[in-house]
Image (cartoon, rainbow, N blue to C red; front, side):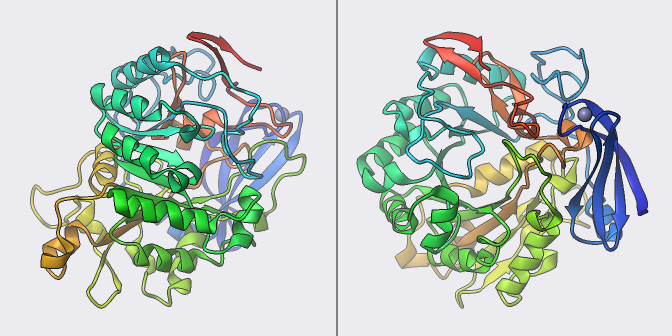
Length: 456
Ligand SMILES: [Zn+2]
């Protein structure tokens, strides 16, 4: 019997009913415990570090401001009314827009469960409506054009341009890199249309990792995609999905690789795996990677170049959703942390305090996740301000919740959302959530031309 740290609500992994849950410290770790009257108990590891660290991580976090406009009313309660409903705590930092369900890979690991047979996709008019819904619901956040694989659409540049016209100045392309590696012209068209940066799936630095996560060798393709981005002067964020026993030993290698590609690479965004789809048995503790695990691995696998204290909790509640950090690449080739400065958090500086939660995340991404084209490496690369503006690396991490780990309070503070073709806004972790039989809490809207119906 562990020590109770807090109470919340969660979902039954089998029937998806909302049930009470307890956060409990046990044996130097933190767990989420819950019991469905019908389907029994579940206990999942959520923090591989002690209670004090778990509680300290939340110090100074604040609730964000709710949606500007709610498209759904409170009816059955969280998480069944997402749209967003008026009880949501934050306004969205990032908005995922699925522009297709098609993909040019068949990955064993896929959030979006992309499927080649689902060929219906939103047309330009539906997409225009989705941009309008975002602006009305949460305002100008970061947009991630996603899928499936968004680059299978020839009109993706037009979709990016439409977003810029609609008032979004930070548009990321969520891609596996296949097409931009092969077709530099397509990449140039994306950039010219207003895409701000490439959000590149990047699971590791050896092909055995890609064979496991994506079903084929891809490392050369990733390097080619990066070469093309360097040539076209568009920034890249490397996005590794971290899986225990597959690539959790490569976090240091990924950092070293990213360093070698600065200033094209602006950041690494680690995503510890979450368990979606059919899983008849709950994942074990060994299948889990928590935030402290990622920090510990970054520290040890870089021989202390990155340090535990360089990584800051997310400002918005729930802070247990993410960390962020910011490093300058020194002339000696070392990463030097200035995480506090980059977040605009200067303590003991009178009125200069951190901006409101979702605003600080939006600014962080918009400022740092793009390439500054005005710099001239030959004339001022040694200058401190040039290094601050160009030779840096952000390292961030966001573990998504699954049906075992889902915490309704965390979900209520979720600031990564998905916009649907029928103009709703749904937190990422609710949108992709499945029960043990693989059934989704929110079914994928099925798109036929510009008519929108409900799938499933
Ligand atoms: Zn149940």
